[in-house]
Amino acid sequence: MDELRTVTHWIDGAPARAAADRRSVVWNPATGRAQAEVVLATGEDVNLAVASGRRAFAQWSMSSVSARQRVLFAFRELVNANAERLAKCITAEHGKVLSDARGEVQRGLEVVEFACGIGQLLKGEYSDQVSSEVDSYTFRQPIGVVAGITPFNFPVMVPMWMHPVAIACGNSFILKPSERDPSPSLILAELWRDAGLPDGVFNVVQGDREAVDALLDHPGIAAISFVGSTPIARVVHERASATHKRVQALGGAKNHAVVLPDAELDFAVEHLIAAGFGSAGERCMAISVVIAVGGVGPDLIERLGVRAATIQVGPGDDAASEMGPIVTEAARQRILEIIDAGSEEGARVAVDGRGCTVEGHEDGFFVGPTILAEVTPEMRCYRDEIFGPVLCVMEVATLDAAIALINENAYGNGTAIFTSSGDAARRFSREVEVGMVGVNVPIPVPMAYHSFGGWKDSLFGEHHVHGMEGVSFYTRAKVVTQRWPEASAPSGASYHFPTAR
Ligand code: NAD
Image (tube, rainbow, N blue to C red; front, side):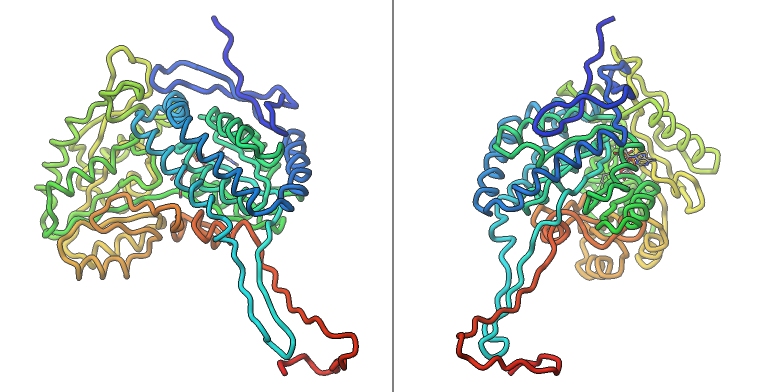
């Protein structure tokens, strides 16, 4: 058997060997075969990355805004030129279809483009003559070495929510990608190097919990950005806060789409199918629950079922595939278990993807589109984030009942409403306790110049990612109050607290 490729760390502008021989398998989800091994960091590797980041920060944080912008623009061009290479790498390790992977790269690129305008974004504030002969100004400075810990489901886009903004602000950045699809991180590292970024400003540490714990506890790291599941996000927030770091920890989701009786039903069905089954449901903004309001349920379930049956399931690199495999066999087994539990607890399996096999890819980690109807709030399929191609359908009598159901749910990442009533849409948008809302838009992912983040158990910490929230997260404000007295001027000093004159 051929030796497996090794995915390494990247420290100080080059691939770096691991301190210890800890490794994990990287699967090809479409074939079910191992395709690489990724090294897993220990605290020693993390120490090296932080030391490299600190050395680089001393120079990079002093570089001019124009110099940083030039690197960002060069990186933008290189990501654009390598978009197909990145997309193929995502598909090979994550399994999502190539068109979806291309979309992910594009959305990441938009954050780079946002960060190219860092000169405008970092402009401070100036107040003239706040007291006699005294002026004040506020400006923002980078915070140091910052780290990003990211999930498997967007191995390019989610890290790009973080590092372009952090680096443009003058920080150095350590990426800890998911060990399930680690290779795109090394392409990004190469592109940063080729763009002229000084060594050590962008480092990659591969690993699992051991690497994460070392990053969270390291006193040389100023801030942690985390995206992943809610239980880990909660722990990351608590542990990193205990060492007084800034933390933004984005967690899991259970995104509901409400369909009112006045919705354009064919339009809603097409969008619900795409939002529920795109990327095999492995998106934090996937629709996983449909709430049918006021008797629209039976017709909606019928139409969803007909449409779901037409979805082409297959390997991500086949242009005919609309939905690829699940990332690992363990994730696949968990999804199947939750469907079984739903059925045992009384949900009706209206479309059953459990027996799905793909010709020529019999060992691939496939689950077909699945629709569970008659779902109720106490069922496991409603309580747990499934993160697979499973749509749960619930029925309620009124919009108020739909809003109450969503607001009682622990998660609050995204939600959507399908309606032709502006009044209903407005009320829904204002009353629903969720961070991102779509009106006749099922996956309301904000553009890079807005910020992305959920509410409740979908986000721990107060900052969303990218947009101006990202700039604030990766910088701290300084306010300077200054006067330039003539040598002969009276000092005017006094013992009372200074007030404006
Ligand atoms: P995950 O929580 O298993 O892993 C996320 C990161 O944490 C990875 O880098 C992983 O190596 C690390 N990790 C895993 N277990 C750990 C542990 N015990 N201690 C410390 N670190 C640990 O998530 P995942 O399965 O890779 O990704 C899917 C999850 O991410 C879903 O819950 C999804 O909703 C969520 N997600 C959320 C958003 C968002 O914007 N809110 C975006 C994408 C994904």
